[in-house]
Amino acid sequence: MTTPTRDAILQWVDAHQADVIGLAQSLVRIPSENKPPHGSEKACQMFVAEILRDIGCRVDVFTPPEVVGLTEHPAYWPGRDYTDRPNVVGVMSPQPEGPVGKAAGRKSLLFTGHIDVVPAVGQGKYTWWDGTIEDGRLYGRGANDMKGGIATYLMAARCIRELGFELKGDLILETVVDEEFGGAHGSLACCLRGYNADLAILSEPNNMLVSTAHRGGQQFRLFTCTEGVGMGFGDTILRDPVTALGHLLAALDRYNEERNARPRPKGFENDVFPLMPFLLRSGELLPWGTGEAIPDTAWVEFWIEIPPGVTEEQLKSELRGVVAQATEVTPTLQRVTTRWEERTRFLAGSSMADDHPLVGVLATNLAAVTGQPPAFGPAPFACDGFIFNLHSPTPVVIVGPHGANAHAPDEWVSVADLVALTKTYALTIADWLI
Image (cartoon, rainbow, N blue to C red):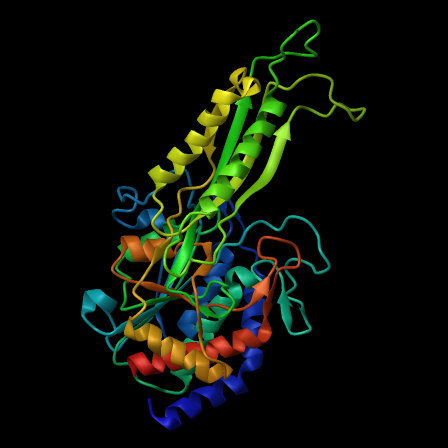
């Protein structure tokens, strides 16, 4: 890239900072909650489609089930309803029609992000959908995870278009549905539809790291069950699912300490992989504020994270083994039955090659924009990056903004990072495609 080109890009973004932030606010202000098996992404996706048309993209709007081969794919996980839940893809290309990216044999770059957000539950200082800005932070559901990141690559593409640069390859911009709660069909459908590139950049909020690897995980419910006991009057040995569940929670905690003491893969040597209980349930609360019988069921819902290399069979086998071993030595557990329920699909951890030339280009541009050496490290979360690395010809690198409170009240994203990422992405597009 020539110096005048680089200067033009940086000057354009500086002059359009308000537009970058305003677009992120606009996306936050359109609710797009994912409530499995349903979701309400359509209004926000139609807004994105219009933005893509305005910047001169050819636009493809389709629901995941419309894509041939989705339901037969090994990564398909049944149970979702995609009524009025479209993916949106925009393409800038030197060719007005026909195949794009790898299928066309041209250089290519793909930006990807999920438009769905977790439900707005609970109340903090800031309202969910206002997109309030205070002290350099943009607040709102999805601001951090991950509409702020989406705004940056849409604005980077607008920068390239408005500066009049001619692309020698294909720029693909996609926003997908149903990533939260172990979705990933949105990303899989785009890959199967032919939107594959030399590299995908995923703008999940990883605190401005350059991440060529990410964690995996899965969410489960573990039940302890028995027949109705009532108050157990006269019973010398009670069948007690609540105490039994307590023993299992202690066993899972010991297991988690043990597995975190194992050697970790390269890049994850200092990481801790949590097992996080989210919900505990048992019994019924009577109108006067107490329970008056031993419940027949108790359960815990928990999320467990894993490094790349851990397979679905390995994870499930180890968890079943924890329950079996605890039951063998605990009489309370021997008096109940247990069962598992998978609350999300298995999300594999995955990685791509560190030496991909585009990763170097991206890291160099990030350093030039921020004035700091690029920080490399795995993304500290599970995401749909595994769809790219394991089920498509497109490797994925994750670079996204700082923020906090994802999936919680007062979720926020750094406004300064949104501007910096827009510059970084626009420079990277120019380096690779013009």
